[in-house]
Amino acid sequence: MAYKQLPIVNVAVDRLRLDLANYRIPIAPDDEDAALNYLFASEDVLDQIKLFLRDGYFDNEVPIAVEEDGDYVILEGNRRVSALKAIARPSIAPSHQAQVEELRTRYATEVPNMPKAIRVIVVPSRGAARKHIARLHTGLSKRRWSRDQQANYYFSFLGPGVTVKDLKAMYPDVEIVRFLRMVAVRRFLSGVKFCDRALRDYVISADLTMSSFEYAYRNAAIAAAIGIKFDADGRIEPGRKKPENIGADLASEVRDGLEYLMKGFQSGTLNTRSAEFKAGSQEQTELIAHLIGSSTVGAGETGDTSSSGERGEAGGGVAGASGHTSAEGGAGTGGGRNEPGSTGRGPNDPDTRQGLDVSGLPFDHIPSNLKKRVLELRAINLNKTPAAGAMLLRSVLEATIKWHFDGNSPAVSGMLSEVFPSVAGKYGSQKALRDSINAITSGSATTSGSIKWFNAAAHNPNLQVKAEAVRSAYALAQPVLIRLMKPA
Figure 1 (cartoon, rainbow, N blue to C red):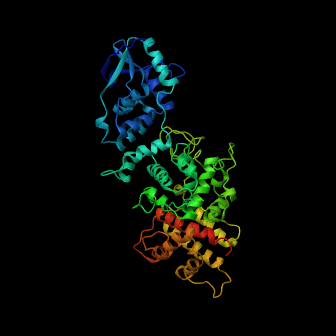
Figure 2: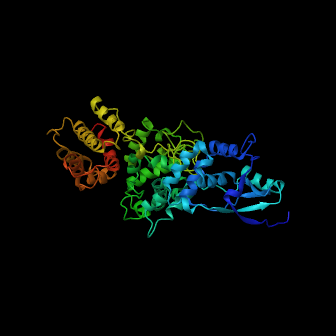
Figure 3: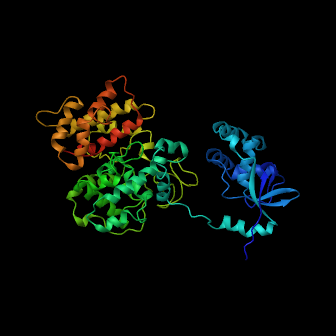
């Protein structure tokens, strides 16, 4: 058909009428009030109101209207028009008026910027618009960005004048740090000097999706074992170095552990449903222990056996981490933390739990009373009692050291500063543990997880202990605890 340009006119919002024959509504309503009520109840007009107030009205998708009885009836865009009408006059939706008023109060500075009139495309008849409307709603007019593409989009904002804090304010409903971690990890992997050249191509390709690989690195012990530790803004520490340079400088045994992990993802042996990423599983404990001691693993143990089947759900996962049943998906940020447009559950991110994720710690050998303290770390509410969490973590670390070296002569006893030298003396030369041990031993009082920090948390009345600091302390201590919870 030859292209025929349709007129676009500016029409006052109060002159726009909802379509009572709207295909969204199963049974045609008797009047516009009934149509409006249905759209609010079933089509989440409140969410549309929030988006308009937060991001502004943007007419990249111009509503389609037909002129009938002197008014413009909206054939396409009823939800958007309903939102604009309710913003201007909340009383038109009495069942949702309080919620609309709450949004107007929350975004009070943006309310005056809402348009009183908008552009609409005017079609000569309802029939003329049917094919176009059907294509919009029964086809896929825009391909949804993958998580990696979303991550790159948010990362592109950062630079002079735009900080992570600014980005969070711009997108308050998006897990910005999670996306920034994805970009950082991809860049980190791109710098690693893999012995297997095929892995280099794999980690920089779309074949490896970060929404899948985050199942691994969101566990602090797995991340530490492969050379990754995040700061609060999603950067890989040390933040002064580029992620790719951190990857390039990995010690050989850490790189070997990472290579083992990546081969698992490449072959399909490890995936979003693998038991290795399920909280509390024996497989996860064995994986972490394997990564820490990966230099002793033979080439034939890398798990190259292909597995197309998927096992049970990955601990609160991103079907995980993406809030979908596949490894990829649309926007979302899960666990009750989904981004707009996502469905299903999101990730059970260790950083969002009330307590610490102790699933990677091996409980097989430790005494029952010490095990109870470890489980208290999982149950404690760090958001409410972070200082108590810090002192409990110190107790677990100190008690585990004493148990591990029980029977030594002379006996290992005393406070943390007195018993930790035994750890440094025995395991400080192991490259997989060296950085953690050095940071615990010599870190300043501002280094979460250092001996000085633990002392300040317990004795300095001016130190404010925050939940994220306790989580960082645990991330630092976790690889050491994994080794110490096994017999010497």
